[in-house]
Length: 248
Image (cartoon, rainbow, N blue to C red; front, side, top):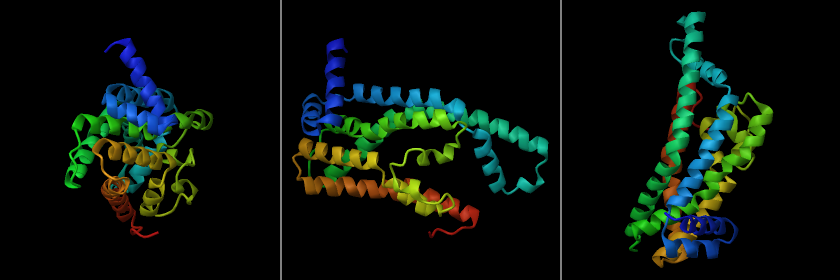
């Protein structure tokens, strides 16, 4: 890939955020996704490099131990060893996730978008769908950069409380002891997520020739499915483990 192509792809990615109509038209015309994925991955890695040393993995590990079935029988030495191990695993997991999650997320979203629009009666090209997904997800992928000032100034930070550092979602305004299910639903209504949903909807409508209403329906149903499977179901399991029930 030449430097000219990289510059043009970067300009297209920037245009998607500042002038969606023009930016998405460029994305659909060029059907290139690598630069957007690299931008998202670089952002994710930068966040990890700055944030991981400032995460309070000990607090998170202690909380998990308290929820475990054998917490009462553990000796102080065993607890200390478990916390140290959890700290190491947590750090590695964040770095690994930062390196691979952006690309894998884009691929997964592109596949399900492609499938959903096929079911909706259109014929989306996968390469174009991948380009729309990669650029449409940029607001969500770049949002962690806005967390960095708060992470630096408020360190050590509980990793589970990151959502409260940037009040861009409804969950940030709920009490910390609210039901996990309620928090999961509320945190899903996030400014950057909604921004990405709009971009993906507009991009897929332009790519496939579908009406904006049909595109919004397909994208909205996919969003509801991931909300149920990836957020509500795990939150309900956590609530059950805590003996809280799934209600608010």
